[in-house]
Every structure is written in C-alpha cells, then in structure tokens.
Image 1 (cartoon, helix red, strand yellow):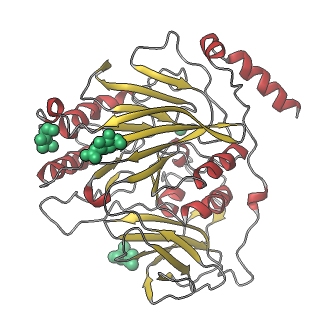
Image 2 (cartoon, helix red, strand yellow):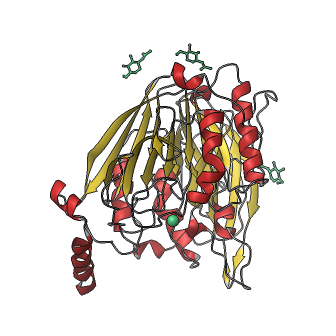
Image 3 (cartoon, rainbow, N blue to C red):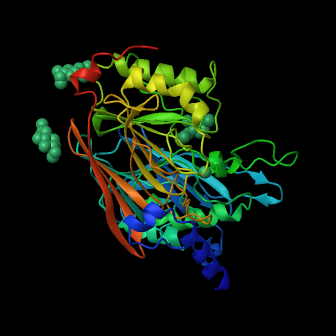
Length: 447
Ligand SMILES: *[C@@H]1O[C@H](CO)[C@@H](O)[C@H](O)[C@H]1NC(C)=O
Ligand SMILES: *[C@@H]1O[C@H](CO)[C@@H](O)[C@H](O)[C@H]1NC(C)=O
Ligand SMILES: *[C@@H]1O[C@H](CO)[C@@H](O)[C@H](O)[C@H]1NC(C)=O
Ligand SMILES: [Fe+2]
C-alpha cells in the first residue's frame, strides 16, 4: 500500500507541466501482477487443453495453438454448430525446456478452409469439457482491428482486456511485449490463461518485443525460446498464387499477412531480428513489397507493426528505433506507401502526423505508439518539451487502439484510454488510404 502511494506521488511529480495543465485525468500507478492466474487448470489426467489461441494462416485457414500438461493428441475437431464437430485436423506437438522449467505439450493444428464471418465451435485434444468458439474474419471490407502493445498480466491488463472484449472486432494486432514473463516461465502459462478468452475467439497476430528475447548467457543462449514455441505465427505460409504471393519468411520473428480479401496487407516486422543490409529480414521485406506491386489489385491499406517506435517524443527509449528506421523507412515509403506504423515499447500513447525522414509528409505513414496495454513496469510519463510539430497527440495512460478500415479509402483510428475502469475515446483520426491518393501512389518504385 505504502509502495503504491509512493509510486503515485512520484508519478504525479514526474508529470510534464504541459500535460498537467491540459488534462484533468490523473494517471494511475502501475498495478501488480495478477497472482491468482498462477493456478493451473490441467485436469486430473493433464489432458485438459489450456492457453488456447488462434492466428490466421492465409485467406481461409486458422491455426489453433494450445497446451496440455501431459501428452495429448494434437487434434482439433470443429464445426459451425455447438457440440457437433464434423471436421477434424491433426497438427504437431512440441515442447521446450528452460533452465529447470519443462513446458507442457505445446500443440498446434491448422484448420480450414473456413467460411468468412462465421462462428466455429471447436475442441482441442478431444476434450469435450472445453468447447471454445471463434468468429472468422470477413472476406471483404469493412475490417476492424484492435491494436494493443506491451500487454503484460496486471490489473491494468485485465482492465484493457475487458475493454477489448466489449469491442466488436475481427483480429487483434500486438506489436510486442506479451507476457512480461522475464525468464520466469510459468508466467508464460499464466499469461496464456489470462488472454485465452479473447485469443481463442479472435485471431491474435503478434510480433516480438524485448521481453520475448529471454536469452541467458551460458544457460539459455538461444533467444525467443518460449515465444517461438508458444506464439507461432504464419511466417512459413506460402500462398498458391506464385506470381503475386508474398514469400514465406522462414523466421517467426517477421512475416506478413492479408485480411479482407487482400484489401489490407499487414507487415509484422522484427525489432529484435537482424535488419541490417543483407539480412534475411530486409531481403524478405523487399520480396514481400515486390510481390505487393505485382498484384492485379493492390491493397487499399498497408500497415506495419514494430516493437520499438521509429518516431517518439517520449524520453523513454529515445533513439532506440533509429537504426531500424534508417534500414527500412525508405523502403516502406517508396516501396509500399505504408499507411500507418504501430509500435509499442514506450509505455504511453502517441500519434504522429504523416511523417517521412523526420518531417511531415503527405505520403508518409501515420506513426502510432500504443505501448500502454497494462504491463507491470508502469507508464512512461516524461515527454520531451516542447512537443515536436510532427507529434499530433500524446498522453501516458493505459488503453488500447482500434482501427476500423471502413472502405478502400477510409480507416478510422481511435485510442481508448482506461479511465479508471471505463474505456474513453481520447483520440481519434481518419486515415485516408495512400493507394487512393494520386500524388502519393504515382511515385511507388522499387528501392
Ligand atoms: C507438422 O510439422 C511438419 C514438419 O514441420 C510440417 O511439415 C507439417 O505441415 C506440420 N503439420 C501440421 C498439420 O501443421
Ligand atoms: C468510405 O467511407 C467514408 C467514411 O465513412 C465515406 O465518407 C466515403 O464516402 C466512403 N467511400 C465510399 C466509396 O463508399
Ligand atoms: C492511383 O490513384 C488514382 C486516383 O485515385 C487511381 O485511379 C489509381 O488506380 C491509383 N493507382 C494505384 C496503383 O493504386
Ligand atoms: Fe519493450
């Protein structure tokens, strides 16, 4: 209690004067990691599926990922009516050890083809006691994303997840820093249980943050051991159309995917994968963007996610994204006309105007930092004064964002702040597609 009061006092003192004057909302202190989540629900025989989450694999398939304490079949039975499973798929099982920790059996199976905008009911490892359901995304616009970064597993996370659950959305995007397990592997399990109600019902598409690295010199030299085993993304998905298909990346740390029948292309970039000249990530990105331009119908919107922001006027982590920005910014600008870039890492919200090479530019992406999901480290309260002219809105509060791609030319971005326990729309802006902008779309060229 005393610690919380002290934290609050420090927090209030740390508030930049300009913010304190312009906003009456008193930013809350960090909330503790939820301890009740450490309970296991494995079942007597260890076969009860837990930590279920789904992700998109191509236009009409979904990967189901789950964990059982003991070995169990990697089967998913599914159908469009509750309690009836006319379809079945068998996938693969893996596991990992981390120092003295041994994971449960980590299963995944790809199911489909599935109908768009349809509710499916499913069970994992043949467990009738745990029927789950999800809704497939629509095959055309409109398409609704939720974007939440640096989520963690605290009381604030719970509040954010509650607000997300109240939204009617099609897929969730997470730009890194998921569990804040920070080497303590059972926290990956408690995180999996915390997000399951949402992540088993809508696709969660994630990319990595620094908290996913978990490298331990000598003991655990291989980075991303837990993350790669538990949050497998469709990096190896190869589309059938060999002319316009985006190439598989061969690395879970960066990949791309389409939604809404190809109307939106999403680049999931890796802030902690090599992005230097000649790196596999840069080669893949070039090939991905080249494939975009070979398409008969280009996507209406192109989005990118990174963990470390390329533009930020927060004092926290200042300059950390510069090297990656130098490696990729021109490619995204000239090669794809990326409409918006979402980042995490800085535990605050900030939205920029369209920016390229440090200046406002009508053909550059809108940059958004949305690292305010609810992690245990608290908020990044110190912004650089004065606010740079390229920064449109900034505030250190917990919350989540929503991007509703309404049609081929318009997308509405809103930021929902957790005011105590109520979600409040505190920032909103219309983003117009650059592909439909004749000034910007003329100069698309290969780098
Ligand atoms: C299981 O793993 C193998 C080897 O990686 C792969 O070829 C196969 O497609 C996987 N099966 C499923 C259903 O995911
Ligand atoms: C797209 O949506 C915007 C915002 O609702 C609307 O103003 C515009 O007319 C729509 N365009 C088309 C072609 O329907
Ligand atoms: C560029 O914009 C113009 C005007 O909106 C549109 O007619 C054209 O199809 C666009 N080109 C591409 C490649 O999107
Ligand atoms: Fe981070």
